[in-house]
Image (cartoon, rainbow, N blue to C red; front, side):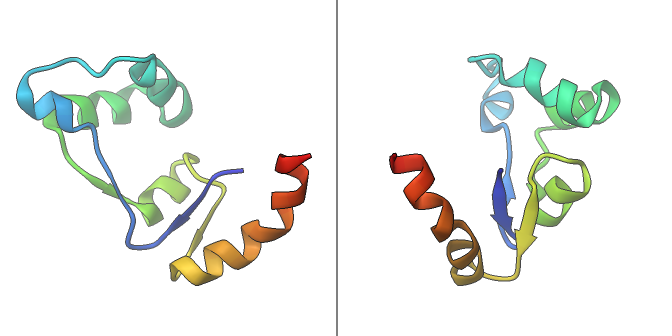
Length: 82
């Protein structure tokens, strides 16, 4: 599960410097949100919001604030630490 807040900002800042993002991020991004949308973000360097990320399937759920996000994710803490 991947959580976000509505005011979260996502970006590929390296493209504004003329660099290619490393670590397989481009391949994963295009797989999750589609090649056309990924190409647009990669070529323009545009930031996107938590709301857009949720709509595109990048995040599981988007919350109004960080406190809500933490409250929902807290029960999973024991599972992750086991």
